[in-house]
Amino acid sequence: MQNLIHQLTNILGAKFILLEDQDKSPYLTDWRKRFTGKALAVALPKSSKEVAQIVKLCSEHQVAIVPQGGHTGFCGGATPDNSGNQIILNLKRMNQIIEIDSVNQSITLEAGCILQAAQEKAADHGFLFPLSLGAEGSCMIGGNLATNAGGTNVLRYGNARDLCLGLEVVTAQGEIWNGVKGLRKDNTGYDLRDLFIGSEGTLGIITAAVMKLYPLPISQWTTLVACESLSSTIHLLNLFQKRANSLLTGFEMMTSESLALNEKHFPHMANPIQGNPPFTVLIELSDHESEEHVRQLLETILEEAFTSHIISDAVIAKNLSQANTFWHMREHITLAQAEEGANLKHDITIPLSSLEAFIQETDLLMRSSFPGVRIINFGHLGDGNLHYNIAPPLDRDPRAFNENYEKQIHDLVYAQVERHKGSISAEHGIGQLKLAGLRAHKGEVAHDLMLAVKKALDPKNILNPHKVVSI
Ligand SMILES: Cc1cc2nc3c(=O)[nH]c(=O)nc-3n(C[C@H](O)[C@H](O)[C@H](O)COP(=O)(O)OP(=O)(O)OC[C@H]3O[C@@H](n4cnc5c(N)ncnc54)[C@H](O)[C@@H]3O)c2cc1C
Image (cartoon, rainbow, N blue to C red):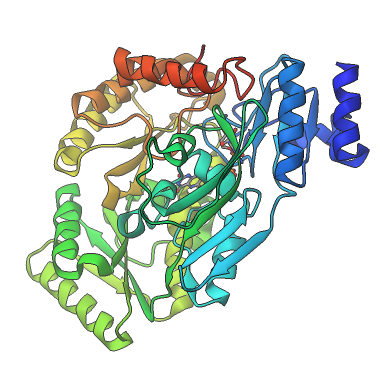
């Protein structure tokens, strides 16, 4: 190992290969503090060439690499194991925005670029970079692509995969695949780009990407509405889809329990809708025509929803600052849960037509099997994506409760997901958290195909072993 460290130091310089415990420590625990590992070293390369050299060396020495971006992932994918023999390869120094191509409407950037920096750069040039999520101030483009991140704009613009035009990837053999092309059509055999997207660092290391840009909307209107039942929230979604079509850019659902937790930890995030409605929905319309056009459209749809008793109250944001407060309220639920302590997350998708039945049945089963648990249910309803999270009863120690009941609670939720033909991971990925459940969920054939891909691309199993699939 000393030889490897010596060679890595030669490539990166002593400053960018971290060996001391206090220097490595910030890279060893995931955002949720569920997983802590050990690492031989943390490598901080500055270029794809350096990444390729590191991978080649690690391959020769049979040392595993854990690629890491902002380390905000929810499934422990970027956290090393406990052996102390793995190298963390963090891409934060590769943070350059290489080009904005206004004609092609695309942005080319290095993998360590922070998502928010990409959004801001695009806006400076009059474009929208639509990927948007609560961790955007710290997650990185490489991590977003490696997890195929979703977020709040999927309804209109798709997830990270849909936004990606091209990639540069360092393979498990330390070669650089240059697929940095801004093409919207390219039918030349197997789609390597799509193979690496969502592979969570197990097939290659993403070092750069070309992503789609869109014209910035002229006007955006945001509203919070109250619904008395889940079926009303779904009727409301269908109504907005029908009337506003592609102008509908956000549709987020929050239950009263989720917002109560928010208010407990962030009192300034109180719901402006009075009366604690069972469901509050955040809706955003974006328009390229005029302020007047979108405002009128929003008011007409809300009026129709009132008249048909789909909604019972609504607050339209008066200005951008209030619109941002509405969005912060939605995004703070995850932070409120972190403040509250350990909880069990379920990032699931259910076909919209089965969503109501899923929630009714699962709530009932959950409350009768685990009396006192708090169901913190919120999510990207427009995508059928729920964050169906379970907090322990208030009088129980969260860690002890989770240790005792985690498996049973996950089993209950995932059995319901299967029953309703959903997915056990809508946008957070598999990592190490959901590794054990993947075979059963995907089925033998799909799982074996995934294993075959892993073995073909990384035969020495040095890229993020025991994440997603285990050889
Ligand atoms: C407050 C909060 C809100 C969030 N909201 C959302 C949301 O709405 N939607 C959503 O999808 N996610 C959400 N997340 C989860 C997380 O932010 C995303 O998964 C994000 O895409 C991870 O990016 P990262 O740079 O932090 O990746 P990391 O956590 O560092 O890594 C994630 C995985 O990708 C791999 N990886 C990282 N970089 C590379 C690379 N360059 N090449 C190859 N593999 C790599 C890692 O090995 C790991 O397996 C949220 C997280 C937080 C903390």
